[in-house]
Length: 121
Image (cartoon, rainbow, N blue to C red):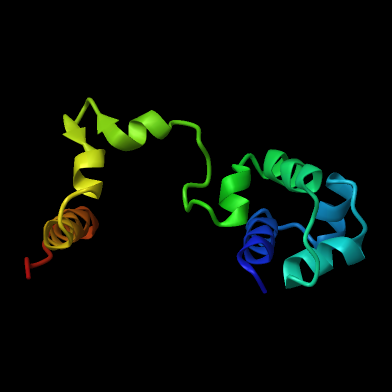
């Protein structure tokens, strides 16, 4: 199964749709959709557009050109005025710094899941 097929299947299952249901919504046969999901056939650009529109994702996401599901709000990905953080700088930081930030973020997340009375590790 190729990336396009995996992503179509992932989105279909995420939205709790059968192949038949999705096929009907994007004007395909169940057999066509099955072949796309299995990577046996490649849909034409119009079908990719229809599937992307239905799930409100970018065609680039379906094709594996990006892991960003949608282009909506792309600006917020790079700057959060509330936090005063430029995420683009973090993205371009050395791997060691990114790992440090990931560890810090894990600590912050765990703080939010602790219940009153839990001992700090």
